[in-house]
Image (cartoon, rainbow, N blue to C red; front, side):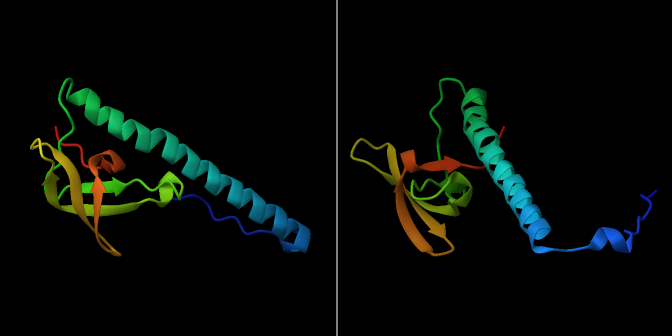
Length: 121
């Protein structure tokens, strides 16, 4: 089952600068709407969904977890992803920072600045 192919009429294909600019602006608006909605709905709900499945339990990271690295310089949809290489505990024995492998190399970040992307039941 497929949709019928509609051939545009030659008259409909008139291309001018004004119509191209309108089309470009419309596509940019759609793309921005998509990224804003993804950022607001998916990323924020991902963390809250993980927390709500584990009431009273602190989010724990494990080696090889995939994380999203928060970076206030960029919008959320531009943040880097990485894989946890090492957990770095503080003096109290609790994990306070993580060594993360990213496409640009290894970086160390506080657990407050990363979001776990993998939700395990």
